[in-house]
Image (tube, rainbow, N blue to C red):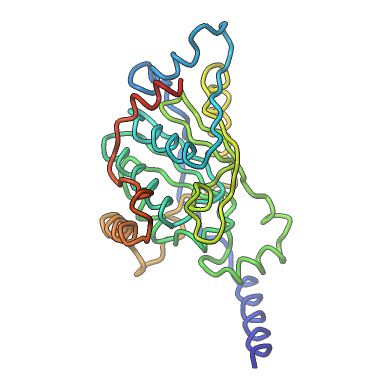
Length: 285
């Protein structure tokens, strides 16, 4: 019986994929990074990192531990005053994923211009399309997907889509970058999710990254813009279905509720509210 159900399900998925096309894209205007900020904590940290280095040099601070990895991301998000450009392969809807998303939305609340660019490969096991559209509804947030799948929120369908159109679907975006105020950037192999920051229940990953500043930043900014304006990009609103909408307020309320319900040891709990990172970044630089 299980084998029969699998065969029937597979035939249905193949037929469904074959009859589907991507929706008409939301009209997108070309977007480009803002002029790097010359004031605020991010700019001051960049200047300190560059102190004593010759003109045209870049600086890097290694990010080795899982603890430093999440703290440095929070430091950039909380300290940004002008812009946040975030490019990722995976953003999980778990304890650390919800925390970082809420802090990004808090940055948008205070007027920071936020651009989020995500690969679409595994969104079916993280955020749903209606959640992504809710995030995009913030007036200071733009959210785009790279190379989206034909069928949404069904992992079996996504797998069949990969098999039937591997040439197109295997073009994935593995970049993992957070750029704050155009002056500091985190480059890393880490996505966003509990097991990337030492909060995984069954396993955790160890990776390396760096906080960079200086001469390399203009190229990082241009690299983000190239993806942002590429032909493989879709606005998340293209996949919002009538009758399945979610408000931003509802999304944030549910995310906060789930965040507070997570079973995390008291000594490892993270604060949902914004923090002052002046001392942290001053020591790091």
